[in-house]
Every structure is written in C-alpha cells, then in structure tokens.
Length: 509
Image (tube, rainbow, N blue to C red; front, side):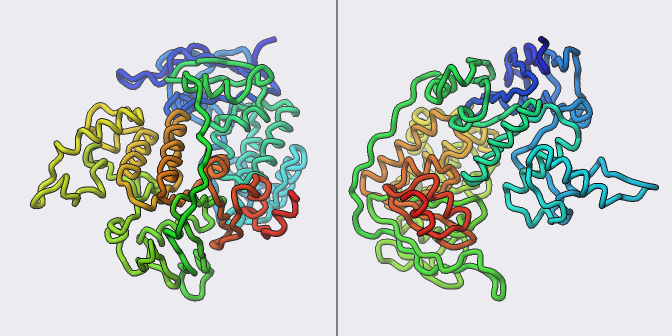
C-alpha cells in the first residue's frame, strides 16, 4: 500500500552549508511519526520544506502517490497539510470560534455567520474530542487551551497531515498528558501526525515510529516498540550518555535570602506577590512553573534588572535591594539569562567580546581602561573546546552563532565567573543532548563545591534531576516548596496548576 506521504532524498543547501542531506521519510495514514534530533540537526528545515516555507535544493515530495511542490503554506494547506507552530498565531481579542474559522469563515450575502461558525467549531471539537469554549476570547484562554485552538484550526482547514512543532514546550504535565491523548485519538481517526520534539519520554508514549536526525542526515528510523529512550539518545548524539553523579548532601548556611518581594503597579494584580525563598551554600533550589507565572520577574528582582516595590534581597547577609546589576555581580551573583539575545549577549559583538562581558573590569584583563584580550583568549578557546561551541573564529559575530552555540558560550562564561551564587535560567534551552549532559554535570560540580544555584527551568525533568529543593510558582506567588525526596511530577503538576500543597502531597500519600 502506498504511503500517504514520502519525502525522498530531500537536500537543502545554504551556500556551502548543507542543512539536510538526502533525507528520506515516509508517513502512513493513522500514524504518529516523531522526528527527533539535536539542535541544528535539520528537523526544522525539513518541515519548512514540507510546509512550503522553503524550497529544496533537490529531492521530491510524494503526497498520496503524486509528486507535489509547494510555493508557500497556503498551497500545502490546500493539499491537506497543516502545521501547529511552537509559537501560537492567534488573535487574542477574537473568540475561539473566530480564530478557528478565520480565512474560511461561513458567510451569507457577504456577511459573517457567527452562529454557523460556533456550531461548526463545536461539531468539530466534539468529533475529535477536543474541549473548547467557542465564545471565550483567545486571550483569556490558558496555554493548553490556545494550543487546542491551533489544532482545531488546522482540522477545520481540512488537514489530514498535521505537523506539531515542539508542542509540549509550554504545557504543564497534566496538559501534556491531555495533548498526547489527543494526538493518539487523531491518529485513530485516520489523521497522520508528524511530531517534532526533543522529549524522548513523550516520543515513547505516543509515537509509532521515530526518525532520528544528526548533522542533517538520518541516523536511524525505528518503531518505538523496538527501541527505548536511551537508544534514541545514543542515535542523536553518536555516543552513550553518562548518568548524572549522585548529589552530595552538603547544604550549609543561607547564601541568598529573598523576602516578601513584590513587583507591580498600584491598583493592579502584582506580577510578584510577596515572594520569599532562600538558597543555601551547597544547594540547588529549583523553581518550577508554567512560563509566565512570575519566574522572569523573580530573576530580574534578584539580579537588579527590576526594582521591587516591597521586600528585600540579601546575599551572605548583605542587603542588595537598592544595588544595581554591577554591584550585585561584584557581591557574588552570576547569571545565565533566560533570553540569550535580550540579556545575555550583543548580536554585533564578537565571540571574544561576548565571552569577556561581565569580566571587562577584572584587573587580569584590563589596565588603564584598555582590554588585554590576549590574556583572555586562552580561556575562551578552552571553553570552545570543552563545550564544543561551533564558531569560525573568536572574531565571528555572536549573532551569527546558532542559538544553541550562543547558549553554550554564555553558560561557559557565567560558570567561569566563579560567583558563590549562580542564577541559571533555562540553562539548557536550545542546546543538544550532549551539551545538556555537560552543563548538568557542571552545575552539580559547582553545587558540590559549596556554591548555591537558583535554577529556573520549564523542563520538569531538569528540575527533578538537579534540585535539592523545589519551589513552584503560580500567578506570581510561591505555591509550595518541596524537598526533592517528596517531589514527583504529579505533586509538582498540582501546584503548577494552582492546587494547594496539601492537595499535592495527599494525592501521592
């Protein structure tokens, strides 16, 4: 029987760089195909060619037995291919139904038939068991609800093949479970799903087959029933991953104390509402929560990027509440920022200059307002080697590096600052599995040396693997703080969704 979709010998070159090198995949009716690979492996480029956003240098796409080519997404959509992007494309002032039918609105005499749109969307939602409130504004919907809108939108457009790009990146574990059930149900109804992800446990739960890419080539294509997450990881990085070393129990005196921190305009709901936490020497305090629940504001309050209306920040007993970023850095705070481009680098600065940021006043590297770059270059070259940072030279612009390589450079810089407190916000965002392994080991090594780490991550697996204690944020507040021994994905999920700590612990007791 012919495949619903084949991509044969797909190759995409950008000058001398080959992003995709003779890639072949197939997809059958009712099948979930996961495409996995490290950062820069070629997953996104391949899907952009399938969706008409890029044109292949060579190769062909066979859809339902016929060769096709798409000059843009509208042609792909018209042939039954839909894509749910990682960053949703919604009109937040429109209702759920309006967002789903936009571009294909039911009309009569040129006028929009709102009731007909609501009825059509409700019927579609019931058919595929995707719960939505058609009259609710998209801006008032949760992230999980917004994702369901995007899925219904491509179904409304008639998609038989649905591409999901990192669909679980911003969901709570409960929402992830719901999405995986939806994916499986869609496949059971005859839809074909392509799942782009780096979360191998989710791949094992929902996919029928997995195609692994590395450096633009296919390194393996296997049925999930014949493999496991460790074998997939090995195909992705080309070697066996090492297990994390056991954590030593060396928690000491209080290093960081944030007390009653409040940020927000008067008369409005505060962005941070009386947040208090401590980080001790020799401890990693993980902060979990769905993105947008106050984590960014907490980081900015501690590092000095935002002034606080109430509360205090102390490091080793020293009050830093009124101090600026430089003074806090001198006091002993280093910071891996959550947004590498906005806070962590300047795109027009060189790799060398980016590595020096934050240490430019260090007497070892500056003299009478002149930077002594030569004495710094040996260290930067060592970082590039240890973290496998791909760059043409130290003079290459930081903005020319891939996101993952720039992230590795920033992580290396902040770890090498040797501050007693490291604020690590999404430290492995966008990096490959091999680099993630190295960064995790480096964080544990820093912690085991007696320093403290405040780890903010949207990856629960990362929080659970590294943290000694875990604080959960919900709507600008600390919903609960758990010892690692009592924290599970289920207990954290209850808190992340706004449940109470006693409810979370009771569910697993």
